Image (cartoon, rainbow, N blue to C red; front, side, top):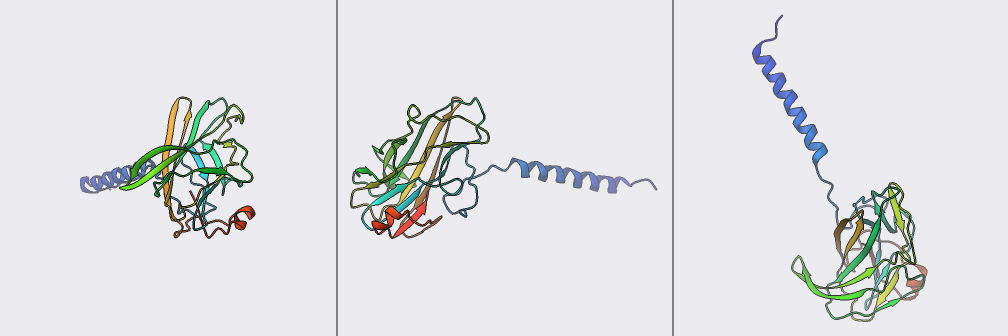
Length: 214
């Protein structure tokens, strides 16, 4: 029996709608969440990905990148052999805008420079002061591989006193084949414990009372 024009029209509309929905599903951008993902989940943000532990002891802020992939450490995503990776930096923003001095802690090997004060700004209306650390490719070279390239993550610093209640954000930036890849993650605070992790043994001596991964 021939198909009626009405039935054919409905089928065409249904087919067209399925095609639109399929296209939409593939075109939805991947949006990075702050730090609330489970520890075992890969965050997969293009650029310098990974996790740095932020710790508070009531007076100071500690930054600790040591640990093993995928729950701790730093790496560049979506890389391939032969890529050129340069200009890797992380800027940590503290909501306490007094100038912090940073001191290297145990396990820090100098692959990342001590954070340098870059002045004040605002994030979502919150006054912050930024501190930038730069990766030393000359002393700690990397060989790009697929799909991720690991960076030395033995960074471990603490501030002087007066920063124990500070919110902390991190802006990661790296240049891959001439393209600058940058994103902001945070904030974390002493009270949210998102992506929390057990502090290192050396940190426990300092009586760390809160931690979160950024």
